[in-house]
Image 1: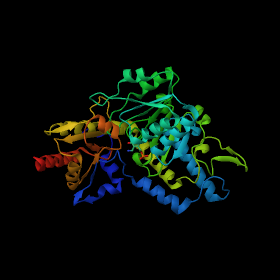
Image 2: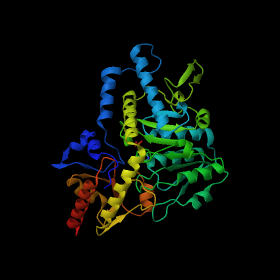
Image 3: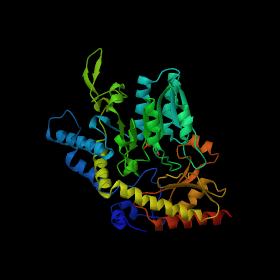
Image 4: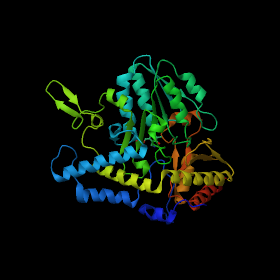
Length: 408
Ligand code: PMP
């Protein structure tokens, strides 16, 4: 393989990759569920507690000012990382799920009324499906769900046909966590904007694999989790265009999101603090900062190119195994493969693959409407990160052959 970067050096940055599982070197292919953390991120959390721990905002003493400055510096890093216009558009959350619930709840209350429609797709993670379903039901609105073709791709003509004067928002995944499909989001956004309809992108699987430029995409909202991009659990981001965030009501109420509180009413803080009630995950945000610096140093373009090689290699090697069927063969894919082996149940396959030291995920991947649509019990999913190697994919191939052997 043509090495774009130094894989040995990168692997050495991730302490967990040195672990043995069942006396074999760990092969970690569950990166779509959560990525491992480099030493730089682990150290940033320890450093925060050893040197800087304090609640942020409002403090006048040294530690509080320092913790606040570092927190706000991370907000600037996030803004630059996704090329947002300004930090008022960057809201820290505890993950993609909270970002999506925030928009569904707050945008719904502000803009969605009886008879209105929201468009989403059949390939969504429950986090970008259930909040819209419940919000629409509560507000008397209709959730319209676009389908996919055999390859796991959306049909732009179908989405175009769903758009009407009733449409208030289109919410879809940048990248599918089950199929790997990279959706044609720029085309969908252009189409929606012709009708002044905002578009939300669930970027939980986009942010770690692709360079993301929210101004270039021109999306109106972009949501992601820190833990899927080498940062700590319990961190996440909601990017939103100021024109919407300004008008949207607060999602949670409490400290920090207020300006003045009187006995009979309250005025709210400015963006982004209006949407950041309560003490945030300061330690996690320190780790998120370190993760972004780490990714920037490797370069998202390099990561995308290397992971694409892994995807091609895995697709070719798994295709050689009789009985392996892929789910998601889109022309534009991120680095994951979802598959079934003959008629072996995905859980049985996953258990055997695990015993061979390879961590894959099995089941519905929190996308039950999609799994029902495909009429399968679930899939086995191997999702790759830039610290994975072709040699590890060879281990997966051996494990799959073992599954076939045991079930033949
Ligand atoms: N959307 C997609 C596409 C995902 O893959 C996930 C996580 N599997 C989520 C949303 C939810 O992310 P989290 O659980 O980190 O909030």
